[in-house]
Amino acid sequence: MLEKYLQVHPEVQKAIAAGEPVVALESTIISHGMPYPKNIEMAKNVSRIIRENGAVPATIAIIDGVLKVGLTEEEIEFLGTSKDVVKASRRDLPFIISKKLTGATTVATTMILANLAGVKVFATGGIGGVHRGAQETFDISADLQELANTDVAVICAGAKSILDIGLTLEYLETNGVPVIGFGTDEMPAFYTRRSGFGVDYRVESSMEVATALKAKWDLDLKGGMVIGNPIPEEFEMDYDTITNAIESALKEAEEKNIAGKKVTPFLLDRVKTITAGKSLESNIELVYNNAKVAAQIAKDLSDISK
Image (tube, rainbow, N blue to C red):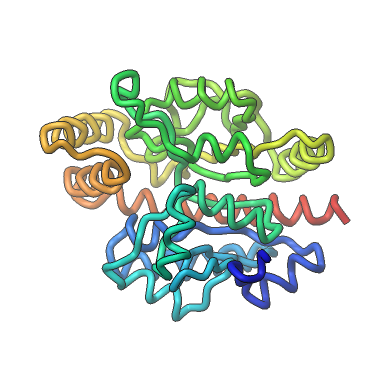
């Protein structure tokens, strides 16, 4: 029955069947996260970095109602240039399929489709989380519930700094999701290496992460793991600059009554404008860094699982 909906790229399918390392990649960053042609350039470079570090890249999306794990260059180009791509989370999947729409996958949906295909490691920019003011709005990303229930490890530069990072960590703790600092004691805050909030465990190598993942899933402890990988220092943004930009963008979003799935793209775009494009450069570099670490973790997990 699954074959009716899911199409896995032959190269990705072959690697999965052989137990070789594969890294899942989301597609919202291509369709909604970056302007053309930077988005296409970024996607191609991420795939190259993953290959250079010994793994197979698998960008995930829904095209004409078909769930795709592993895209061709033509499909990536299509996603990066099309205006009618739905930002797809868990709730959207049945309707994107039934209406034969094209959808770009968020962290949550990428995890779902990666898990269906048997891919256990996923590299992204930053996870969603509890939005600021959630005590009134109840605006909490579906990414967090997916992390609690779906067996995929997410390598990221922490939670997006537009979020309430403290509440996001509390939510993950309640749901038993380990939050790991890759070479850091603090949860990274996307554009900056520090947030002021600690992680559950610090690790120094990809093998430490792989060993913990294998133990977790061998014990049938459901759910994923957040591996917070700080943006390289040379691309980190000044803390005060980014904080002020976010505060300004949040105020503007509130004044314009922007809510729901439109909030994050609006805020990231405004922050990019306020910082004269510097945030976009940081965003791209942190994704490259996460892709490299994810490939190393996938390779180690593959080695110890054979």
